[in-house]
Image 1 (cartoon, helix red, strand yellow):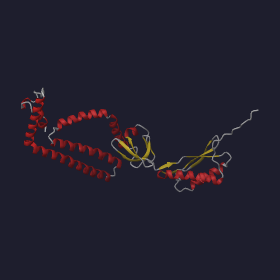
Image 2 (image 1 turned 135 degrees about the vertical axis):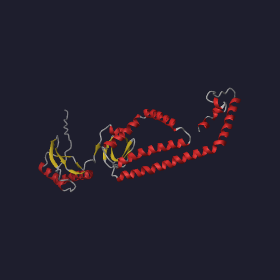
Image 3 (image 1 turned 180 degrees about the horizontal axis):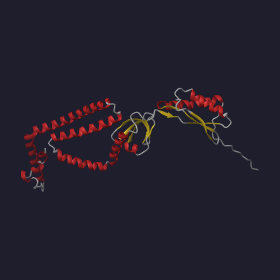
Image 4 (image 1 turned 60 degrees about the vertical axis):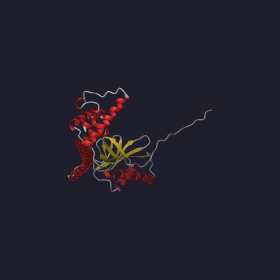
Length: 307
């Protein structure tokens, strides 16, 4: 393969002087002569080594694609083994992705070696290029390191509903450089891992129970004890609200235009949204039925006639 790449230089110099005798073109005839000599040497080389070159190319292609298929099969098998070992699904995907690309690199090196490329020197070139690319892609490498941190420290897992990187959604996957979230309105958002680890992560699904925090205001003219009793009844009527910890209903503030109650029941995390919406609706309907008032800011304007 290397010899084939040097044919253009060998066309104008003896075999031992190719490196010391650079090609000199002074007239168009020289250029034509050099091209003719190069063509003749290419034909001669193909006649002598063409079959072997074709075999090497076909072999390299077969090695690459067969190796790619084998790498995919091996990583799938490894994923199944790790899943049977009850390893976290997010960690399994992360590890299998890394192993798959490492196997692909090995397969590519084997294919290049079959073509006659010196893999030792090629590896050194790849390492130098990798260093240069790494310096240019520091942000991407930072995202990769952040992905490793997310896997090691596990602030969330697959299926958790989180707020991270300025996005709220359900965790679908942690990839090598980013985390994929599905928002409540069914959008797919890809967040760089670095933005997640550099910010605040709120995991709404980590604990089995959550507290609902509602602030309900009534008018100063309403019967305070009747309002409190009604709020307790609303909580007692919902079977999804937990008895332990005990729900809390209390006067929290005497506002400018309302007396404010805090309503804090505990529910299972999976029931949080449904119970919160249901409580809000029932409280509003109950206020209307009982004649309680929801105060809202108002302003009295007095006008005086000039004269």
